[in-house]
Length: 175
Image 1 (cartoon, rainbow, N blue to C red):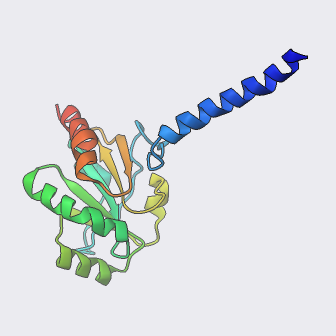
Image 2 (cartoon, rainbow, N blue to C red):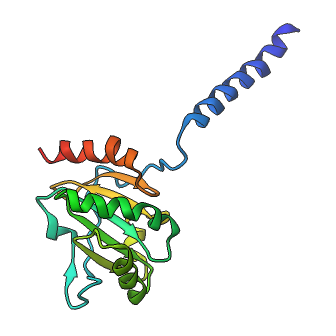
């Protein structure tokens, strides 16, 4: 009779263990199926010069960041001062992917808050964002010299995430 109660008790303890593990995980750390795979190819017009285009192949041979942003994004406003400061202190190219935004709004936003980007590509319909697996803005991708996505950071970049995750990876990839 006592063995009959052991099975539900064992199942209960297994569930408690899984719950405890789940509670220690960061809900912002969404795994990207594109990690360690080539960055999806695209060619988009540039925000500042619509007659010019940008493609990830333009930066082959360099480590760079792709930061998905929009003027309507509240969280983008949160991380933007950090990106502006970082861009002034470092030579790491930051490419903006202006996501589902109005061109005039995006230009005014950059003029008002500063422009940390080497350039911003315009993803007006969001198709490139879909190819990159964008869940929402902001998102930032670290792309290596070969054009491979090495990291996806979901949500606003913080000083801590920049210092402990992004910069060490960039330093390793830049060797």
